[in-house]
Length: 443
Ligand SMILES: Nc1ncnc2c1ncn2[C@@H]1O[C@H](COP(=O)(O)OP(=O)(O)O)[C@@H](O)[C@H]1O
Ligand SMILES: O=P(O)(O)O[C@H]1O[C@H](CO)[C@@H](O[C@H]2O[C@H](CO)[C@@H](O)[C@H](O)[C@H]2O)[C@H](O)[C@H]1O
Image (tube, helix red, strand yellow):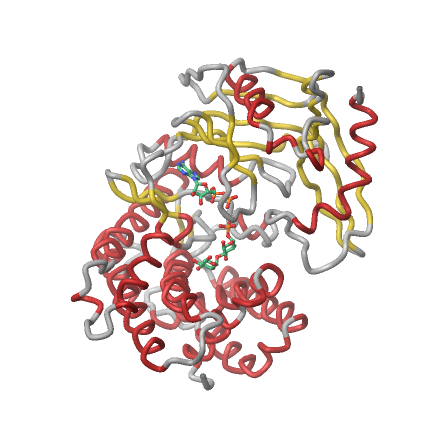
């Protein structure tokens, strides 16, 4: 029988080869050059062994902490694949347990049953989520950042002001990293009847592509009504976040920082993705133009990585999930007050993605390209209209903040270039061709 100590040693030895193959591993651009244990907490001493592990992953000059659950029961020691062992985590939350530095807690007034098994969500993700029965979803954050996780902080705040567009937070697991209390997992209400926006939108695009002679508004699977309701939901969440946590007018320093950050991100991305080079002058010009926004800019807490995969359609309407911000961005940026138009831009990018990803790897087809653009324009317009209808007066109509929105959209597309380069190189053409279209530089 393996004991916890031997198990941790074995896992540490296997990680350099195993990590890069995991979807949630954020460092696929460089080899893993070392892994060391930061903390290990034994959750089950034997039969089966279950160890909560935080390791520091070294990749040349970069270091980042990652969370793992190790066991001797399954291949590659990753316990999240084991339904029975996953059940232990929910049981510990249900009992408000404390083991070593790990604190398992329910949100106030929440009751949770014990004895449920946890099945991993299999869709592409930045973290690992486990679904228990038809009511609970526990997200284990993989790459950790010392301190409270914005996903929990923002959704708790939204719950307190009665936001109708989130799934209720039900509990959390907190550990200690760099001497700071750190959120390592969040438990939420699972919405079993939900369909994500990406699945709905891409189905609609496929319907349109299949109907050679019809326009988007004539096709049964038209998404524009949903896009408009989604815009209203996003604007409402922004208003709720401002009510819960405040908002303010950006001053000259805030704007300067934001424009500088967009330029710096561009520098970093173009250094590793030379395909972006031809667009650099136009991108810089667009970022500079963001300085001139008539009426000023309101900043507040926002979602930070909003796209169609982060919204769920339930029988009651749209829900927003995953308020963690861009997985690759530093925590200072993810928790900073920012313009809500960044989320609008994120969603506009996503409509463009939904329309154009079906063309990836296909032979050039002018007719399909025209239809993709038609779908994207129609749904982007519907979303923005819905947003404008429900937006707080201080935020206003995104269509009257054209330069700012354009700069944010381009900045997001630059982020996506880096994301696709590291994770799905065959999709790199999607953000690159959008940049070409928006800047008018070819394609
Ligand atoms: N409350 C929920 N109800 C139903 N499904 C959910 C819920 N939260 C997340 N999911 C599903 O789990 C997937 C991953 O969740 P997400 O919070 O986006 O994790 P990640 O941070 O790993 O990207 C989502 O795409 C969605 O399909
Ligand atoms: O894992 P997260 O959901 O937090 O977000 C990351 O992965 C997303 C892809 O799964 C990525 O989104 C990009 O691709 C989407 C289609 O798969 C598209 O709808 C988005 O508009 C596009 O940005 C996201 O950027 C990344 O942070």
